[in-house]
Length: 283
Image (cartoon, rainbow, N blue to C red):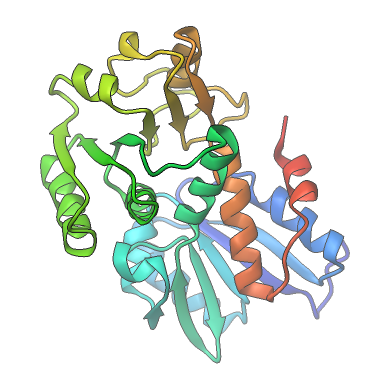
């Protein structure tokens, strides 16, 4: 890339960010579009997040992405929230507009588009089991609810956080049947009854050989198992175990791709080249 004094900057705020494929994906899109924009990783500790976000203004950034563990706290620092971010209280995309910080969330859009590529049919009659209750889980839960799924079950390490997500959904989608459990409770019945199983936690990142405490022996060829984390090997213990049971699987690259495309449109008003972006991140 030819970076000049006129090059505009977009960053990704996270801790850590050393594993992220976003710079490779976004810079390939900007190059293909002929845009003088550079996308850079910005490792920011939680205690430094307010200074980092306000620094985006001072340095004239066009915007930024926000990743783990900052999605909820970053939303609180915005001047305004739009779209699903208003419901979820979590963001993954910041747009600088007339000196104001506008928070958006494209995670849910990215997840649904990726899931529809795998399922090839309507989600309306499907039940889903969601592991996690953080920023990404909130976005996924809201997007599934907007698709009028049959039922959503939430399991999380902290019951309080799971109940908070359930309460959020009850306020906005009162007709959606919900079930809440903790990770240390039995979940065999939920695995059996849920066509879609989603790990929306960071369990499974490369170097971590763990997987969520899930009754994987109950998975079948009728299940779709999703893991939103992505690793250099493009494999996680959960996905490997699910494939061993004949289930269809979906890693985190599809969600990364589609949420990134939606973010580029927010920053530039241009629809990015999906094929170029996909080629940049696929192994």
